[in-house]
Image 1 (spheres, helix red, strand yellow):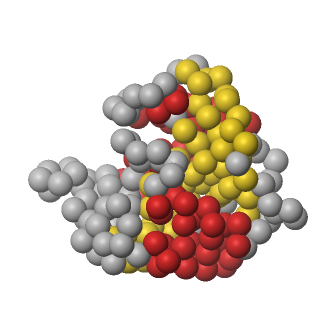
Image 2 (tube, rainbow, N blue to C red; image 1 turned 180 degrees about the horizontal axis):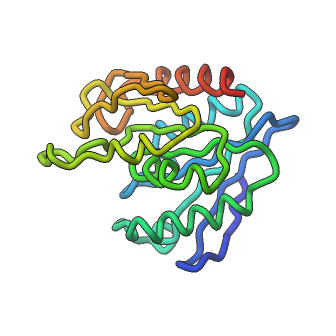
Length: 194
């Protein structure tokens, strides 16, 4: 993948683009709060996309590009994401990410004009804070959505919805225990979506 630096209002974001020939769409993925774009589930989703002729763009938020592990506030993450995705327009877009990146994709799905949203390990409820729910972020998405969640994820299991398919794979929030299962779920969903 060839990295492309994108200057945004909140710093430099980095896009690792992996185009495929005769692409049906582009899948744009964001990383989790403390992790990077090499997370096993993101790698599996990218491989799944390429297998069904979907180009991939993995987006690093400016705080990660600068070497920090603590995420920026949600409004900054969303603003950067919108700036970067606008640069990638030109073919049908599917947006998504893992954990925090999935939240960003959900909150901005309408503004990006996404045809679908892919959520890997969506953090429904912070562990130990059962009264806090982020279900509203999933509910605001009006296009088809796939949520791939570990069966032992301490952040909980989102419910399926009218346009929301939830696939459980063995493992916890990292989704490392069943990488082939993640890839298979994403590949099947993308192929049906497009």
